[in-house]
Image (cartoon, rainbow, N blue to C red; front, side, top):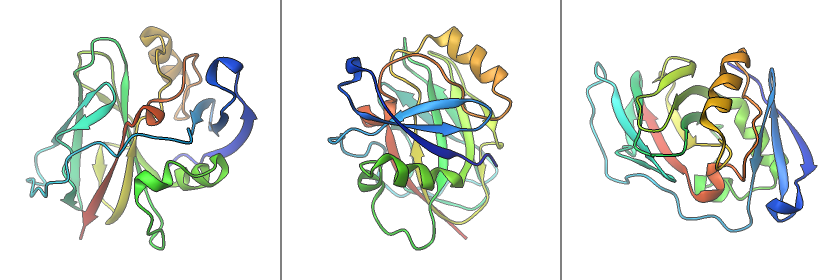
Length: 196
């Protein structure tokens, strides 16, 4: 697992002077937390997927479609991107057992607090526009029971080729690329529970 260290800085005026959270691994990826975020995206309907078959989650601009609210431990996920322009990711962050706030509340935390939660990254799937995704960290399986935040922190409008090249060179860390606020600010986050 990659450990992320939060680093605070002030963003450019183009981003409204928002505070920026940078996750530092082999390189950095900006995570801007806006004061007002959209409601959590994804399905709230329970699901009982077959652990042997991956659960396909569809990424759109800026939401997750077909993401169940609950799955058994060992469930694998596959990501398909139905966007025509944006690259998307499925970052599964295992939340601490004592964390009881909803993911919609967590994404509104100050950058340092939000960054501390990202130490629990279990898997990262990335999908270019109109394509199936691939794992860049982990295997796509969530083996540990608990509550997860599912987020996309790719900068809005990031150049797809630049992002994929940076991801290939990042050696397990999040790539740093130019772009606007991350997709999480656009409301691309959800909550998932993995049961024993």
